Length: 209
Image 1: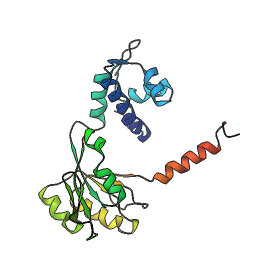
Image 2: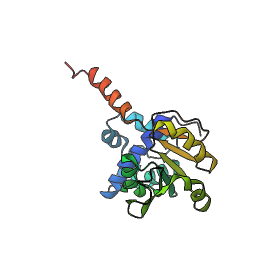
Image 3: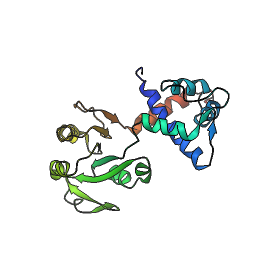
Image 4: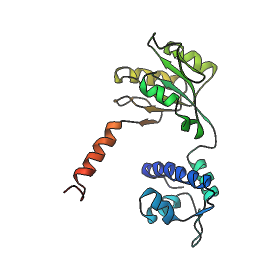
């Protein structure tokens, strides 16, 4: 299989969300045109994206919603439950710990860590109490985890990323406004980027007259 561009992978996650909604409604077959309409993109883009993974539909009849959903879950690695730890029990950490859709999509929060003594020991979500970040290595040794979320200040993010890499974390979602110096995969989340992109779109929109 040829290397799939990252923008395509990002769209697959959105396709899967749409397919899940269709399954809930009892829809069995969906066309590329219908999927494209849900995402406000061209149907040719949908067909091109899905063609990376073989012939998933039938000309004239569309895609089997259940089968396509299963295929995308396989491609995205959602055939298993991914255990997730959160470093940082601030507003972002709390929100993620209580985000029900994460577990619905096979990402289970198993622990939350912080260095703030005022937060350690407090319950942040059902079944989750904030642990001392000093216990990180021991926790990983006894329990393990796949993915880590860094919701911490930029000043400590790289130090923690190095610790996470050493204890076997496979990937990081980073909310800290910095670039991490580690060898494991990192996804950066900066909400200001979306605002800036939207601002550019608005300024250059034909509606902005």
